[in-house]
Length: 426
Length: 213
Image (cartoon, rainbow over all chains, first blue to last red; front, side, top):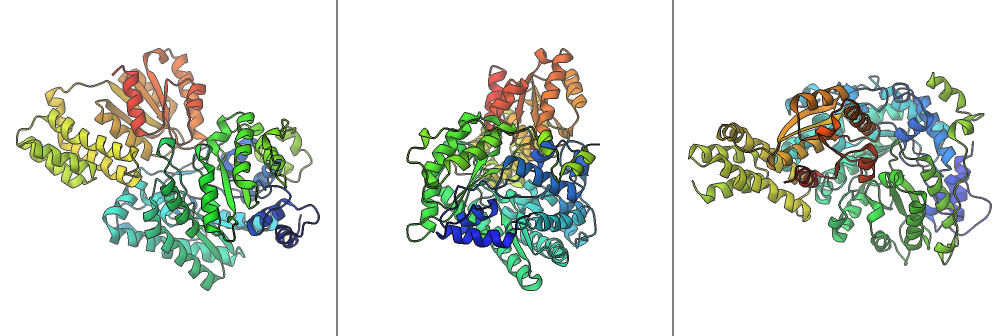
């Protein structure tokens, strides 16, 4: 296992221009985040739990309940694809409400989901009767163990626990339409809901993480992405609660809790509605909750974006003519539905626009279960080839041969994760 | 009652004032306004306006949710009167979210838009097993079957449902639409659907095309 501290130092120095040795994946990410660039543009490990489960052919009822299996499947699949870092999370939006007694639906093939037809919180009166969260209940111990194993097996700046952030948790507990109604029509109820999440649900969860030695946790908040929430509502509600929560966890628990991740993510689906001013507002709101100062695209229909806008935003927020790091995501459905040639062409265009001066990272915005593996292998190879510094003047002249890779089951033979994956299949 | 009252209904629906919309419809009907006029010039005009504002980036999902709520509230006193008046229907539209998937929001928005377009919407709900879809096609004889999914794992159920419709000789009797966040035109083509609904307004428009309206 690589030494994460050395990786970090290597990445820091490499990014600042001391370019020696071959940077590891983790060092590449650090270099692009904190300096100019590494040897190549890094391809970060995406949110991939559905797809990883499908590739590894393990049953959902084991995978979403067993921390070691979840972590090892992620590690194996991430390595098979050649990602430069890991993102290891399960169905991050469900754990808290499940532990509080929400009605859930479990299946053999898919992650657990909340039954919103019978919500946990039906009215304000339910807030007094529900919670505080007992961290020994349901799959909370699994989440904590996942965080511990992530830190142990793939240490680095992104290793740690996960949780469902405030607004998304409210949506999970009462359904999005009712939650929106509270936000727009009943600010007293909205405040009570946010306070309930903050004090009675998330803080006990973070206490349990801290007690278990997990001192870093990321709080997903996709229900606060645009257009589910406007940037104004994100600024009014999500940003202050995320900020306060982070400060409280740091002060009282010594834990870094990054609440509100993905809030403000621009997820408009209709290209005819893309609006530059609105995008900038969304990215500004997103910057306030994201744990790092980055220009971030997440789950949006990025294949249709004019990426010069994201570059312009990154330059505006940077200094000395340098952009802040850009984390550019390939849309999950684009990855599933495109041909390898289309993926290469898109990356060629993006690297030309955003990657020439460094500070660019690529990932996929949540990989769909049935994405053809060849598409992901192609994307990783293309980023590592086209994104080799210095970037070629004419990227269209750089040839990307089809990726050579073994089928996952063949590759798995002799890997450290072989045994647990094969046992899970039985 | 006059144009002013239907305009007020339209405004209340557009602005998502559910209680006001229901009250105004009740008052309009009590005052003798024709149910079809209340529907078309008030309630449908209101939800259509909300849809237009959504298209124009003036409304966002929270606003559309409130407008859909107001639409539903306005339809409560109106639906029985429309039935009595024998209002024409564009046919039955059976809609549901596939098994293993509990995401209700998109399906409910689509249902509201389809109702406003004159479809008789039969909502099977969420987490609907394949057999229930097939049974509904046999029993309800809809003109369109709508399948929704929110997850890339559960959307794969759609392929099985369409294949089973084919196997049981039902496929030629019903048009099939698929929709939901992880779906795409490519996916709709792959599973053999007749149309893909990207969002609620487009779904309504494509549904009308499918029935030749």
